[in-house]
Image (tube, rainbow, N blue to C red):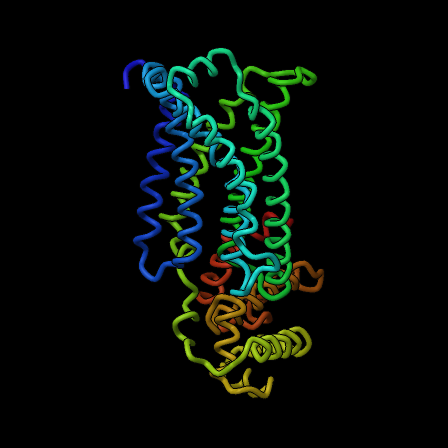
Length: 370
C-alpha cells in the first residue's frame, strides 16, 4: 500500500471489512435471515461507495478511462434511508404488513436511478467533459434531497427503537440488542451530520469549514461503521440470530392477542405481587398465579422478553436489589444480605445475574452509586 494515505488505508479496510462482514453474518447458525439480508444490503452499499471513493482518490487513471464510475456514490443516495428503516423494523417489530407497501418507500430511489441513466447513456468522452466542467445538475440538489430523506427515515426508525426501549425497560432491566442499536444509531447519525455539514459548508459558504470536519470525516465514519458492526458480529452473535422461540414454539395455537393478554397479566402480577421475591419460585408456580398453562407462560416470556424463565425472574431480582440498595434502611446490610432480600438464594447466582444484566459487579455498582 505504498503511497496510500492514512485516510485511504482506513477506507480500504472499512470496505474490505464490510464485504467480510456480509459473508460472516450470513453464515451464522440459526441466523435471522430477513434482518441479516437487509443489513447485508446496507453494508454492501457502504462498501461499494467506500471502494469508489478509494478509486477516485488513488486511481485517477481509472476514472479517466471509465468516468461513469463517478456515478457509483450518487446512484444509491436514496436507498440508505429505506433500507435502514426496514432493518430496524425487521429487528424490533413483530412481522406485520407495513402501513404503506414496502415498494412505495423505494419509488424516489427508482426515479433517481432512472434520471441518472441519462448520464449512463452518454459517451465516455462526453461524460468526462461534463465532469471537468462540473456540469452535473443533480449534484448537489439530489444530495440535499437524500439528506432530508435520510433524516426522515432516521426519525421513523428511532421512533420504533424508542417505543421498543420503553416497552423493554418497563419489563426487564436489560436487553442485549439495545446497546448494539444505540451504537448503530449513533454511527449513522454521525455519518449524516458529517454529510450534512460538508454539503452546506462546501456549497453555501454560510458556515465555517473546518480542516477535518469535511467529506473525509463522513468517509471515515462509514468505515468505522463496518468495524463496529464486525465487533458486534464477533462478540454478540445472538444479535444476528433468530430468537430461540421462533423455532421452539412454531405451530403454537396461541394467537397474537392471546400472547399480549398473558403478557399483560404477567406484568401486572410481577409489579403488584413481586413473586420473584420467592427464592424458590418455579415456572409452574408463576403460571398458577397468572392462571395460565406453564407452557404458554414460557412462550410469552421467550417471545415477548427474549429470555428464559430464570433470566426473566433474575432480571427483576437485580432491579429489586438496585432499588433496595438506594434505601437508607438497607445501608447497614451487606451486599449479600440485600441480594437475599431481593429474592436471590445464592451468592454465585446473584453475582452472575448482576454482571449479566448490568455489565458490572455489585460492588462496582455500589461504588458508582455512592
